[in-house]
Length: 102
Image 1: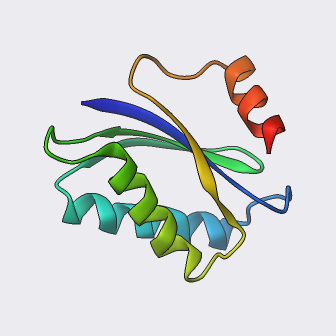
Image 2: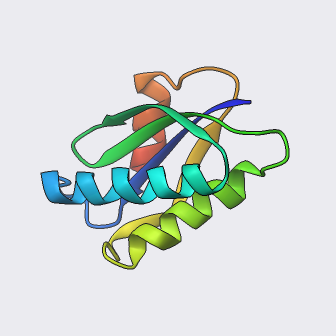
Image 3: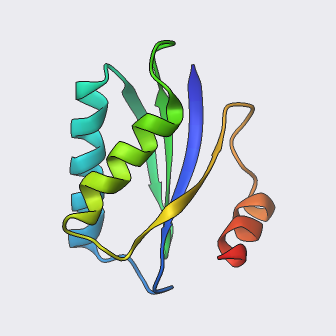
């Protein structure tokens, strides 16, 4: 199944290049371990959106929460709340609404 999910951080500041590398590296490791494929990673100023293909036998929540927990070992500011859909890529309007709710 194809999913889109968005993560953000609690401090509402710019995610640095080093932090982007850590997030990408950690989620790539989780994807490898769960036989998932990260098709696209798109970083915004304060958030990241992933597009992934996930096997039917892996729960999307388990994938995302494992990735967040792995990242938070080095990046404690990464928020545990996330937005996920398997319908279509979230519009900018929907993305901004999610980001403004926290």
